[in-house]
Length: 227
Image 1 (spheres, one colour):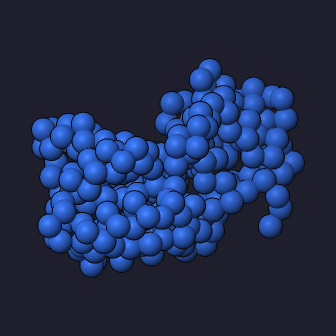
Image 2 (cartoon, one colour):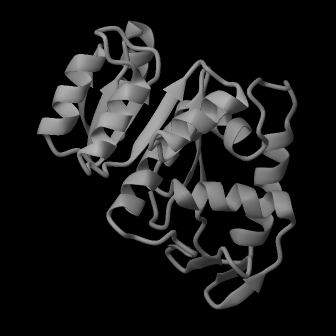
């Protein structure tokens, strides 16, 4: 995907741009509102990450209102330190498709941007996930492997869903704490190890080929094929 990041804070912009590029996306950057408006109006992007407080005489809301006035429907994720309800409402009413506040977890930002881009292409949200012979129905919350039903507790289901959404990727402990437990700190417990162990007992142990792999000094990976 081609993504435009309009952000004047060098540290935040560098962090977001680096992460998006590592995820395989092409990223353009503008550090002020005027350049952001020019790029977003003159080039085609799949999504825009937009700060609200921008130099250059054009703030984020004005940029957004101008784009929408030009019938530019590129999905826009507003990323701002302005976290009050009224701030979020103003951003969404100005034409924003989503709103995230700083500080933020990059994994969540990436997921939201990719979801917005899919929605912009007219793709409905996925209701089923699959990895090898493992299947998950997000609507009925049913899980099967090789046609055999697997009963999971709510947290186990959420953990497996996260792993399946990131199949083939290394998932760190920090990502799991944020994405599955909603922790933005390390509780210094073995909660992840315990739940991964339980999940393996149900998803891997009864079958000849393991899917959940430990990546030493990094985290875990759900992978359908053998290493």
